[in-house]
Image (cartoon, rainbow, N blue to C red; front, side):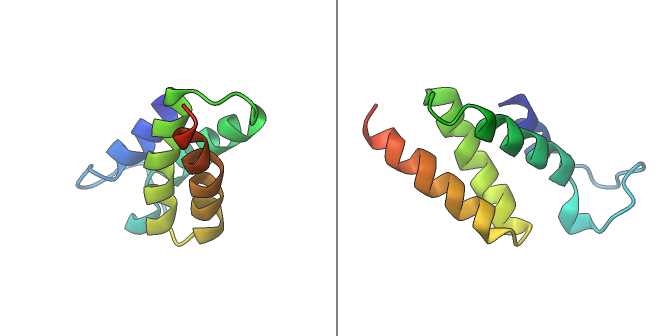
Amino acid sequence: MKYALLSCCARLIRSPRFFKGGMNLVGSAYADKAFELLKSTPTEVTTDKIFTSIILSVQYASFSKLNHSLYLIGKYGYSAKNI
């Protein structure tokens, strides 16, 4: 969850000094790391993973990576009903 929060908070920085991409991709490295961590243990569903998937699905939608966003919504959104 910390990488998902870092990806969200990185977008709030007004002028990032160390980022060399466009402003719409700020925080994408943190989001990719959080996505890989979520995919590493797909069978365990916790509330932490559900909150992380919500944050990341919004982040990936803003990065125009809709396939990642829809994967997270489909995988953890359905699992949230069962908790």
